[in-house]
Image (cartoon, rainbow, N blue to C red; front, side, top):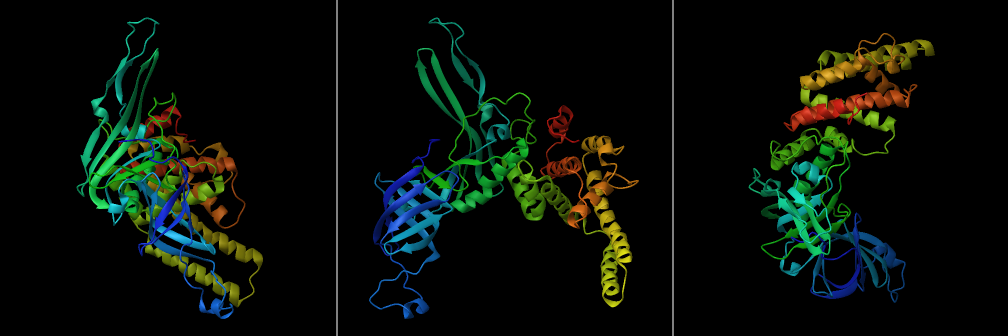
Length: 477
């Protein structure tokens, strides 16, 4: 399997093949992490609308600006490779010039024979697969230490670096390394490996492969390493034909070789090596979380992303934890919900029907907001109690007694969870917000709870996470 794209990023002249059998010349533009675009010359355009036609001289040629779905578009390049855009859009910009664009494109040999654009095998790479694999590709290696002819060199391949599973749907899933070796040239020896995942099974369109395996594996790698991980390359096959390369906004084309972990990096939270978990099981459980807890999983996938303001991060965190608690444990006591609803109704009636002083109405609002804070406190406390004991002990040790940093949020707070609820309400209701340092502490605390529950849903042990916290790789305070 070639780890390099069939075509480097760039622009390529080609003939676009239209559905009616005709063809027009044009250009295909391929780039990393961008939509695929192309120019088509003399592409037939739809006639202008009746309103435009009524205002136009019948002797004129008019193209009304538009952007419409165009379906699958195919082309033939000058090097005899085929290109296909499975779901393209067309924009007629000027007479004789049209722009085609799509989220994905595939380029490879004999694609014209694949009339449905479905593929039965994919090979892809995402950043973080080395850590997610849990296995090094080499057992041992020797490099010359002396400049003599008989200096030993070589490497021993680790057979355990290739792992295979069968998914519940019957797909064959393989996590392995692609290797390349350059013969010695003088005293230079080159041996590199690249971690990839190969899946073969029933024929599917590219977008289904993306949603079933490729995106979940990239998100899992980001969760496991606590670093954003991108999809670097994708290739597809159909019925033994040659591999075709995939391009699009989700594929960076920045392929990488396996490297040793840097000293001080955080332990991988989940992995698929010996003693680890099955990759199909991880993908299945991650997909279940996405379906069952969509808000919670969206936040999990965003934890490694940097640059989001702490106020936005904290607000999103609280919403994701509330959503997770509601789906997992239920909405809570009906009596409190009914009381809260009736309280709001009564407050509106008081405000609209009589003259209530600003001070009295503000007191009523503070009194009513107590119940909202109390309910969130209960939810956060319940989520903390649901953590594995070894992880819960670390959380409790960092929050009892309550840190001095948070001493001014609530007077005589019951616990840290009441403080977190108050901080969320201050942001949500436009009150004076907490400082960045206070929100950072509470966000780290909430992130820990979120990751702890995610590990439980993935049926993964909490030990690597506990190790990361104790070593300071994952900051809890």
